[in-house]
Amino acid sequence: MGESFRIGIIGNGNVSFHFNKWFKQAGHQITSIYSRHETKELTTKTNLDYQNETCDFIIIAVNDDVISEIVSAIKNVGNAIILHTSGTIPLSIFEGFNLQNYGVLYPLQTLQKNKDIALVNVPFLLESNHLETQSKLSTLCDTTNITYQFVDSTKRLTYHLAAVIASNFTNHLLSIADQVLKENDSNLDLLKPLIMETVQKAFELSPIASQTGPAKRQDHQTMQKHLDLLDSDRHSEIYELISQSIISEQQGKSE
Image 1: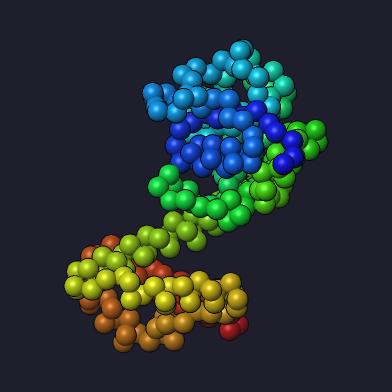
Image 2: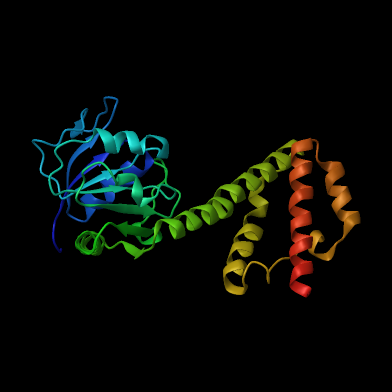
């Protein structure tokens, strides 16, 4: 094992849960986990004063809308590197708070407490305020076997946008498909091979090259049958909007 670090974590949600596990497995020491609510975690603390706690890193793993509040409330951090884990909040949020070392440690992955995930399947996007911080952040990742790259705040936000479209939106479409099937006494299991093949082809060929279906063929008769089957106006609107987007994409490809 390489160098060991002392890490304080702020937050007790999904990201905090996995960070706690990953860093402990790598041999790092979690000095405390801050939570506004009492938990069963033995190292939980209920204040943001680090006067009596020596940390190499303090990781802010909370909702985006309270990061600024947390940054303004932490005290006596010394030379600790303060990191947030957001895909959308710029590095500049740390400016004006008299902090010497700060950066970003953003996991580009969907994380839930009830779903285990191997660290090898989690790429990280990093950012830091100066080269010394960058070097130490790299060492933390290297000793934890984290796959990472440094990007600026704008590129990180772009990745986050693409991730929401590719992951959250896709999951919502699967939810709609599941609902349609259940309303007709069917289930999503039969679609699993199709869904897995679709994702695999998108990476092997590119998403636009692997596109199939009635919208690509401009098979309006089939598309109308689908719309007639949908009971929800909202689902019909989504179907029509995405179908038209596919048609426009294909037309642009052929030009």
